[in-house]
Image (cartoon, rainbow, N blue to C red):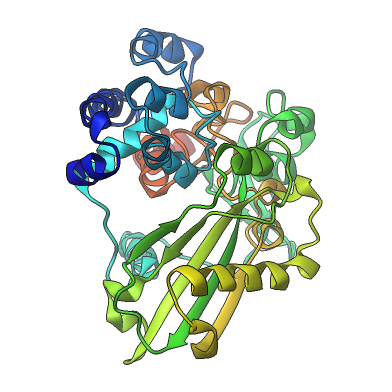
Length: 394
């Protein structure tokens, strides 16, 4: 990395080192110390304010990079990572500069067998502890007792599942707006949810090819001609731009068994605005896919269009309709400073007793490390089984 920085911006090598030191300091506090700690009370936020000020969390991601390096290209390279958690580097708190040190320190990992193997491992863990997994059972409502405690979930077919505690790993805005009745919500009202800032969404194209592209890495980023302006279109102006930046994922570079022998598997994603853009994705998806295909053919996968053997699209409309994400936002609430930590929907619901939230929409936020950290927080705040048994006996 140092050699690459020296190659494109030799005068910024010292500044890059300073940026890394700042990133490490933020990581030590923002991730190691606070990433798996609940923020139940405003005093929890007050306790960390001195650290946040010292680490310049009031800055934006891009601003912190500009403090240390001057080359425009290097500033892009050091700041686009906040998009991995749904944040605009020009608006998101510089806390997310911790990603630079996290990736440098621990590397980037991929589960053999794909992300599905990771999911299967979690299922095995749950079932090994006596739990049961039910798929294709849509939840219609979280039911609440007259003592303001979650007591069950009602499925869309009318079945009611009693529970000592209810845990939602659904998008937090969707959980409150669509699963918990308005009379049980005082902080996360419909008005507040609508007023909150949602992250951008994603256009994702999964495809497989007859033939392998051995010179294409597992991870590739193709940044478009605009940076600040394109992100402004996606986040602030809610406009689907004609240009785009792309991330190309080729998992078969690491795990060839994810495709038949002689074939490759890919997905490519483009950050796009959520559904407030008014885009008709049923009409727009295929032309957009063709534009993405043309860009990939020009830059990385020459002539691959004739080799495509399987194809599937995921649009912001799918994020809303299939994945229950409010406004089709791919990462929940945008991680600006006023929607972080205590300001984010709490892991222990502020609205209803015995209701808990995990996943990207609660603290600490989106991304696989953040989502797993929310489960660690849940383990700290949920009443344990022996307490529940005693309570029922009493």
